[in-house]
Length: 418
Image (cartoon, rainbow, N blue to C red; front, side, top):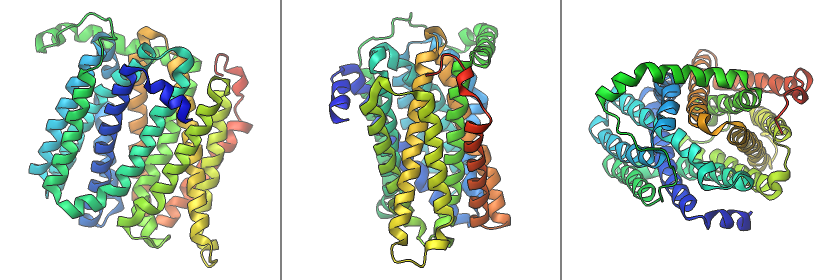
């Protein structure tokens, strides 16, 4: 794994893009988990926690398909630089919004609206700076970074916020975005598209063609089965993650008997290690891996780990209960890596170059919707019943979906997915 990752990082453009990804995702996850804990402790409502995710998802609904069109029309490097600068400024607004839940949610919306334009440009850059045979390694490293940032950010976000106070915490996260912008600026001009300057008048003239390109992107995904299928699997993985994150603080306190501030170390950290292990296995096998089988097998691991966590009260009396809980959480993270890495690689390989920005703009939209809207439902269900019942229902639905993958759907008919 290390050798494969280091060989990818010898590519100077990719190493800069990867470094920018490390810093921006660390900032995002530290902010996200600190704000989730703050709002949960302020309101005491699980449903209110899901509002953070809803604020994150709304930009996808509004800008999702259009962001991919913009990425296809503009220079990727220019988008990467300016979106990171804008996120730096947006995070600083949290200093003014601190203490006002509504204002915090509005800033979360703004940050994610900017990110909606960053992500398609970032993902579409991979095939331009990395050879096709190394895309699986690049995606493994990218997804590993995502999970490592999730692991570190969710583990230290809450404690650091409590230790240094809100102002210093927000300034630190903001400067991570600023450094990311500088790293992107130092990349070469790898995207050879003509640099176009967008202003209000230009955008107004082009709005009809932007909308036409957006519709073409949606039709393209719908008609191209080897793009649509991994997109569905990718989105399903985010449904599970979003619902899990919403329920985790309350489920941890009421069922697992873990303080909310310790959830990061007790649950997120083992899951993150499992994700890194999954990335290691996939990267080790490289291009020989059967990606569609890896996705379906990943859902099996996720289901097993999820159900085992839900039934924790059954084995809680045993002295090794906590060790088992950590093991099952790692299994769940292992399966999640298999789902995300393989499905994202299929999207890279199977998307036509001129449509790739639109594909990843819509993919990000679907991922954010999948992570937030079901989270609102399970949050309300947990408030009406209990975190345990909500988590159990989610586990049953996930298991049913996993079984359906094998018993009810014939993947072999979907030609071109491998």
